[in-house]
Image (tube, rainbow, N blue to C red; front, side, top):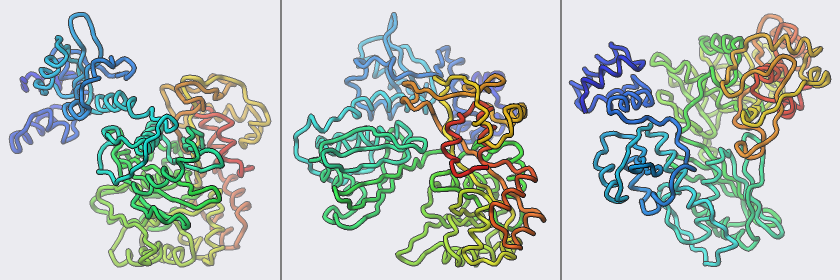
Length: 580
């Protein structure tokens, strides 16, 4: 490979600057290796741009979209998945004169030659990124895994603990093992956050929680309930003989190329043991603060808040409303070498480089309060406490904020103002609350409307009033503001219209794909602090904040509706308790 020619193409046709190229060449002279590898390791250039430049240099096609349905099944029938994954090559389909083969590394000449021999045909290589090729391989080979039907199997179940191998690569013959593997794989494929396995009188019902909503996905005969529970328990390292008490465990597996952590909880019921599996993608990239749904005004305010030297930022909302993701994105934004950041969580969901993260462990009395008390002896600048649940934790957090530390935490309340009264109800004096709190953010996650099947309709006056606007004119005037929510596949609807979800094959009939946050940001000022000192109720505090310009959850949901991201029905669903 002519690296001089490649360097010229990179500077001419990509976003790589000449200074970055010089730095990469210097690293290459010092450490050795190929220029391609140096550029990727130093993150000077996205892989897609680099692959396009390589395709240009080699005179081959670059493919950005790979459809598993276009792959000729006969071409991959005899190819081991381990081979194609290790070399990141996959035959695509036949063309006049040969077979198109997708390649992620143009230097893998020997792999292309092997395929030419195995397929007994001329090979026409096309380039794509390693991520897209790996995803294509996983999807193609997953079709062999996903179709296990227990009712068609009669073998005995014999469960054994598995190595940490990709579930798609597993070759277990026991039907229960393959059925549970397929169950987990399908959940990951459909972006489920939880799997619920519930025994009934006649059948075992499996439901996935996708984008916050439960959907029934499959059933098995009642006779398999004990075997399914035993298999999951073995995977989680639990006691399969104990069926009378709840148990908790963890499973680590590699699924379709992703490292997935699963928290398993069992509970005895009248009809047998029910199992809940919480899925956590360890390879998921932390979302930046600008991408979680904060409008420009909220983002500016949050930027100022998280760069304060001390005080408490509370994020409120029910379980599953995205509070932890918001705090992680805030921590990532301020994560610099000059800051000592410590967290105590239950559990540690994402590991962030440069931050010391501790998981609570009640068995050894490592609670939020004890961990927080210990942290103060480690000279922290920023502390994150997973949740303030009791007076002891609240008291230590407030003392930490008053002694020069910035504290992030969460409480379970419906709105931002409710977080203030919750602290007072725990026993914290109002004067301590008013002097330590700097802001409270309430949030929910709303599902984004499916771009393939969305339909337009005009909103009713009643819907507009429930969203917190006095009239449709006021509602659409608010839509005239640019809240920064730009989505290429979900453009803003025309004036006077909003989107409605319908359902199609792409979104599995739900009408929605993905989620985004809606927010209610209450920043403490002199008027709010005066109300807190008087031990005022949360409704009065909320009304005062709204008069000062705070958007309620429903009003912020209205901005997402007008931006084309979600629907009125979805915002109403997740904010039923917000009558403002």
